[in-house]
Image (cartoon, rainbow, N blue to C red; front, top):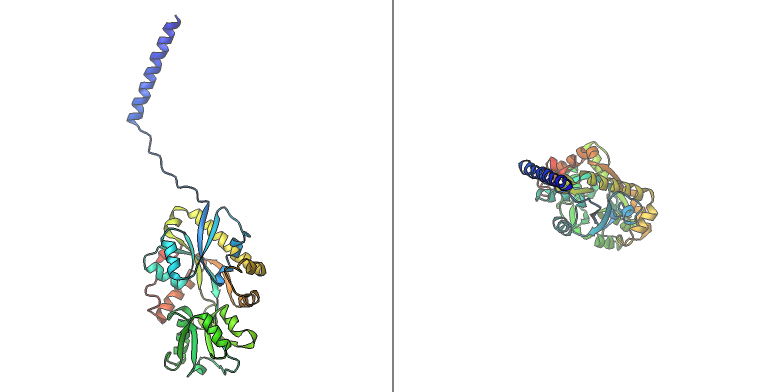
Length: 330
């Protein structure tokens, strides 16, 4: 009797198994969707120089989030582009004008927010009789190397609006900022248009005085705020498309680090000492004339777009193409 029941059970199981196999063949399960691996760490490329201050909170592990942010520093635009396009990083801090030109070359990045707003000033020797742009007629003005950089374009615009002809009524001389500072301190330069902290380095010890604020000139030019969208945080578009939440988290960490560094300047300066080889007292004074405030792009896009369009109008060779909507991470 037991053998009979075992036999019946085996037949039933074979029938059920056969039906299951036939059913699977007729209705195969959908293929498994490959899952993107969780992002636990990203690399952020940051320029050497004063912009090391806003990321001091990240560098010193003073701010935290769900993603670890690995910092790497770049010195030149070419180095930054090479690191970005080689896939070694997905986030990068860039000057806005530089980023627009990189974007026009096919490097698909998107601006998440702007965090540097004030940095450009003109210094004059103690003996100079500066009374406005018109008083620069017949003078030489030294600016950092690179025709078409932001301070160069603003200076040329100010001179032209005053009725002066750049390179004719006023001679503009290009030189590395470190050399400009040395020449200024030696009394061989009367005027220099510089970014901080070179402004402070040139003027320290009574060697010079600040006579013009290019952010205020920009406000006069555009009837807006006395600030310039100078640099910001960018992300590669393909990374943002795959990982929107992770992208938002990195932006949050970056914004928090910028705020922490502003509220803890002494500690931020200490943490940035290796990347920013400038005496702490000099950098501390320079920070009084630098504005690091992170503003998400959805809150400042009109300013960025207006800045790029005006810069192109003033110097078409500097920004050959105004970026389209894909340039903005909104």
